[in-house]
Length: 180
Ligand code: ATP
Ligand code: MG
Image (cartoon, rainbow, N blue to C red; front, side, top):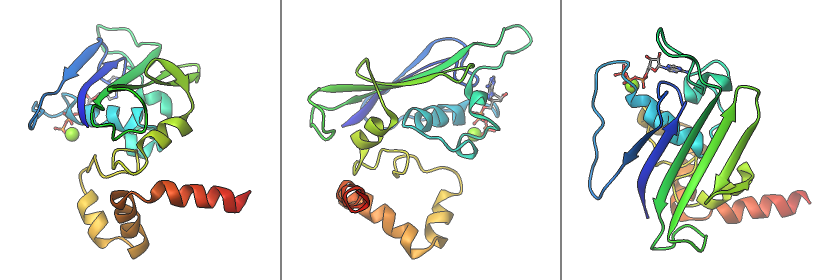
């Protein structure tokens, strides 16, 4: 499984519809300060269901919507879609390619989609359990996070190992059935 593309439209500084295509190997994103490098990582966090405003470096969730510049009007929605190659079927879904999308309107209305079909945030979360990709995963290591992991509580570090070992989904299911 690997990330094939990220499509953004109206997300943070990306007013135009823009598609980043990734190929095998390592891709570096370079640019001057404030040019939007971190916004690309934020877009991936967001589409994976990030709800914590602080993680997205904003004040409210609407702050992810392009807010306009001197010569460009603000937009009414933000949308991000990521496409993953799933030919090894690591994601528990019967498709060779999986596109996950999220859209948010200024009105507060929002939606998630998996391969074009509307779904719940829960479905997005479940799709990525134990892959290391979900919003709690370790596929995005932000600035300062390595220090946090190293100096974190043992329980927090344990969560990372659980995810890597592939047992998160069983733990969640156990918790759900115990609650019921
Ligand atoms: P650095 O090298 O300093 O880390 P960077 O390339 O990572 O910079 P980002 O933090 O990704 O830069 O981008 C910041 C830019 O995004 C700022 O110019 C900010 O005004 C712009 N930005 C953030 N949110 C929005 C928004 N909702 N609408 C328009 N522009 C936005
Ligand atoms: Mg940055």
